[in-house]
Image (cartoon, rainbow, N blue to C red; front, side, top):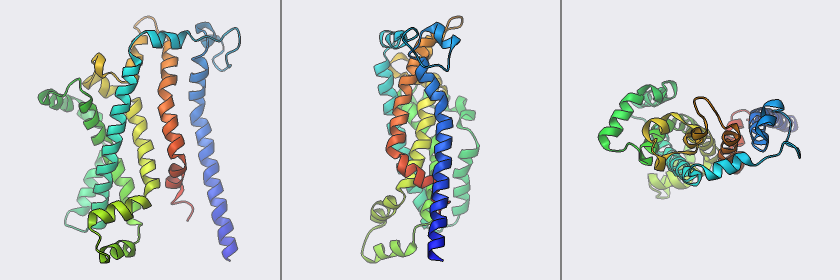
Length: 281
């Protein structure tokens, strides 16, 4: 019986990994098309978009244009600062709120959880006008702080929802043993709870980073100045009303993909564990 159970568990794990690999390949196909076309001439992009570059179609004109026009080093720096700071705040405050909701029972606990979950169902972009008015009144327009605050508020509902579910699965005996040993609630949270939910933290980090890095709406509304442009907004300088420099657009998008892929490679193992943990019990 034990061997059968173990074999079934391994089969489910392999099936879950196979499904994730399949979806990854499907998701990466557009990325591969963008990257290979960034190394081709303009004519080759339209004539044979699915063919890899050869000696006749290979060209670096797109990357040369990106390097010479616009300050893409500054754009990358702005995007990294906004993304990293937003992720740190989302994970910190999201984990703290999730711990409070999952660990303590108080009046209004369910209503508070429901209120936070509404942020998943109601897009934050519906409040763009009000957000812009608040930032203007606070003097935060054309600052990276405005983007960090908005993205933190945008990512918190999903973070609380995911992390609270994982925290409810942690044994109460472990936390009570820590309290008996004299650990404070902060140390229980930092030393006992957080290490056990690393897969969930990686999952939240990946799914929070991608919308932030790729967002065009809020950088265009809140921080359109040259010194605060992000990579996605900076790439728009190559898109005109009548003429679009596709070589430069594809090259800038290819460069913007690199940080997302690096983050995925770093957190891939924890991400798969976080996604499949409920399916392989």
